[in-house]
Length: 345
Image (cartoon, rainbow, N blue to C red; front, side, top):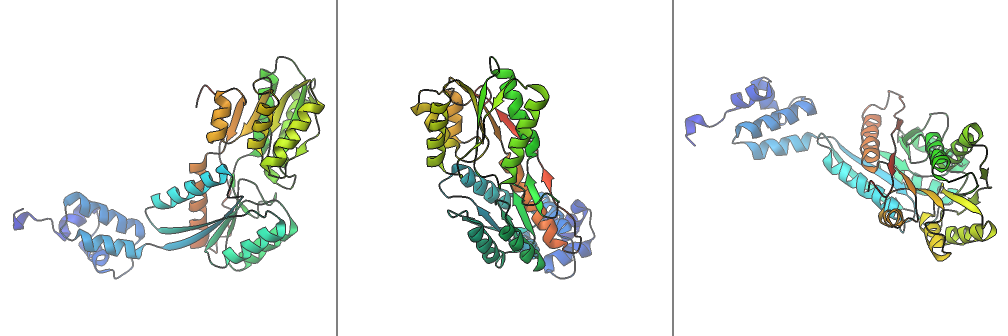
């Protein structure tokens, strides 16, 4: 290129709609320039083919805020939580105006004591913490301790507090339960017995699922008989055993609502007992095993978290909470859920 036509700092300034002095400050790394303006100058420089792109990229990258966010998720053997972790990783990579390091731990021991201990430990190393946990005084105490150290805590998937004092990223689980109930009313040939599987009543998401589920039947379909919920303790093996027993004890059962952890065990039990495809079954989360179960008729209907949106909202909320610690705002975000049948996967 002719030296006289080589793009100059002035050309970059015109393209970015800023002053030459602002471009100089970005290039030198001196002075206070908003990160959004730095990014605009970088994009403008790329657009005009500015010769100093290497230095400019380095200056813009060096000026980006850096955050370390920790996440405590459930057992490493559960595909859903690996999908959550992958969504968080991808969301962090896509953030353009800051650098986010995601640290994820998978917990086999879901006791309140262990969760609270790991929250305090990981929270001591991170700027903010996201956690999937049951409601328990020890967990709430850990949240209060971390927030007292200016480490914001976000509940993911399941709320830890009903009062809104703890940030939450997830679904309106009351609506989730009522939607599941709507499916049974409209798909079952006639009213009958419905079994309910829950992982643990201390998970607010599952408690609200069941509450919304029952409220719908009281209001719209009282002819159905809702059996007492069966606990799976978030375990595949226990879920399979308890589902097999539920089916054996209730040979006339019409449907099964898997409102908590253990869906892979429930699917295995339906297949091993020969009941797959003979019941209306509603469960959660689109992943390889549930996709297959939808396709072969073992599952009728799935309600799923929009994981990419949850990851994006969690990271955005954490950035806002950390960058404006004196706002005392609530960064709760309720997202729409996804619905799947074998016809739309």
